Amino acid sequence: MGRGVMFMLMLCILGVAVMGEDPYIFYTWNVTYGTISPLGVPQQGILINGQFPGPEINSTSNNNVVVNVFNNLDEPLQFTWHGVQQRKNSWQDGVAGTSCHILPGTNYTYHFQVKDQIGSYFYYPTTALHRAAGGFGGLRIFSRLLIPVPYPDPEDEYWVIIGDWYAKSHKTLKSLLDSGRSIGRPNGVLINGKTAKGDGSDQPLYTMKPGKTYKYRICNVGLKDSLNFRIQGHPMKLVETEGSHVVQNTYDSLDVHVGQCYTVLVTADKDPKDYYLVASTRFTKYSLTGKGIIRYTNGVGPASPELPPAPVGWAWSLNQFRSFRWNLTASAARPNPQGSYHYGQINITRTIKLVNTVSKAQGKLRYAINGVSHVDGETPLKLAEYFGVADKVFKYNIISDEPPADLNTITLAPNVVNATFRTFIEIIFENPGKTVQSYNLDGYSFFLVAVEPGKWTPEKRKNYNLLDTVSRHTVQVFPKSWAAIMLTFDNAGMWNLRSEHAENRYLGQQLYISVLSPERSLRDEYNILDSQLLCGIVKDLPRPRPYV
Image (cartoon, rainbow, N blue to C red):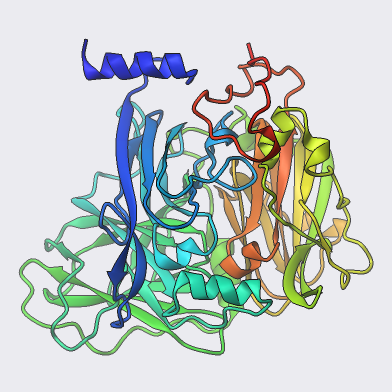
């Protein structure tokens, strides 16, 4: 019996939903500590198979991805697959509200299917402040051969993993937050885990052949700062944003907010020499810059020390956002449900308005949404719900669809909102603060119909883009501004809506949306795996009857 047949048989025995004839791809990760020096000073990093950043997950739409994670750290660990929708499968989302941690010295195998989400994504650890030490890497989903993409195949494609970076260890940063303080400003910006010195000793990250076109996959995996990305002397043609093909406009630079990804095409049509990739902080009182080198294969000179400047102010960034348009003629899969690309014609059944605040609770710094600062318990919310003991772990809807009049008082509790299965809901994010916010919603892509300054009112709907806004999973909200998204809650499960800023998320700026199918059917949600880790009060409970 071949290995593939044996593995499929094992999956059936374990209760894993074997998803037709779609191919399986397998990864084994050994997660360890190691010494890294991304800013020139040795510090403890988190490595996957000895690599920082971690290895790429290279998949094609509809592949079944199997990742066996061995946790050789001294702390519990989980990974999330940022932007992967996990259709019917929140069990594998890798956040504290859906699954138990992988304890030190043990392993756990994630099983999930990447659907028709052609594009650039990434993974990272969601536990503690582990993302501040590494453990992140690129996850790409290629188109199947029968689904063309709206541009010619590039000569090659390259990852550009950018993010701010702290010289302090992840344990030091966590202890600062646990003591009620902020982690403060970062110490630098990295591109693919390093930054060029600019003294002639730097090796190129990538090479390009003259006249050829290359695909760059750009993701901001940082902890705090929006970054502006540009390539010295080279315009970038934007072709994809978080799973959506876009109208192919050309940009000299792109603002990439925390958690966002863009795919661009770059043609090597300049003088043959070295050029800098540049990523620098935006909307901050401090200025931090990371650099990397690309080299023409016939290059004969160093990169110019004159770096292209970043834009100034967030009005520029807002205008750039407004220039992004969905490519309605591309032969790619539409978001579920079928026909929802006519999103402007669907009746809104509910409006939820969410306002972020920061304050002190019990003498310590906390962040909140509508006055509630989320706390994780020992029992994951999804498991409590599935085992019928939710009332012992959390209460539904402790926030209402409108923020309270008093936002200065913060309640610490698990923050879980019910959404009725298959309803079309509008969510408003209002940011009264002085810093840019960035939110991600697991399990879905949404239509980002508007981002505007001021406060939202129903009259603002007349300014919505109801035709060709980009469907994506992460939204920025500028200071003293609001953003509006729309989506159909057709993916049953427990889904995390969180700030992508590590400090905000860790200190409570997140919630979960429970989407329950009344049918309890495999049509709507996969069964829990027999191999699923159990913890908290459900650890020794008998398993409920499986879905049929």
